[in-house]
Image (cartoon, rainbow, N blue to C red; front, side):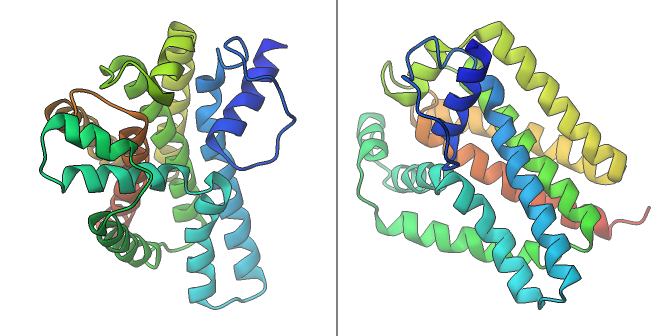
Length: 255
């Protein structure tokens, strides 16, 4: 019963998919982090289903690609993009650490968050147009699982910038060891799926996300003194863009 309630809690927290209402007490959220990558699996599955449908009824390329870009936003409600925008505002403020942490909590958006979001989607859409066939869509779909598995692991093992907020609550209430094992397993599984389809893409994705994890820890410790819920959203968003870039590069390399 606890596992089912944690599953519901995970989808209630990390997606906009309608779920039965539960109390959301500490026990309900204990294993929620274990199911965080499941949201990515839903996104990946819906993207594959949409691509298959779009090809079957001969929709034009613009329609296919724009809907592929829209699906993650529809499912998450822009949850991670919000963190990305807040992080961009804070990083580009060039203020002291405490002021940057205040900017992360500020509900208003600044010019730099809008500029960086536009830049992000220019790159994102450009790379989406380079995806060729269902194999690339399936690799990208597995990437949504991997990005969330890694985000969960960084939440568990990287220092928190604050002793309050959603991320700190998740960290303290999560079943640490069990959550970590589940996240590692799902991360390896997603890499296995990518490797089964394209070993070159898997190697590039593995190298890319490994570098991103180290960079993420460095920038968070340097600028904020640790990770926050907003920087976690930034990580997921950047990880998905990086995986998309790796798929594009992998498809261009000689086998």
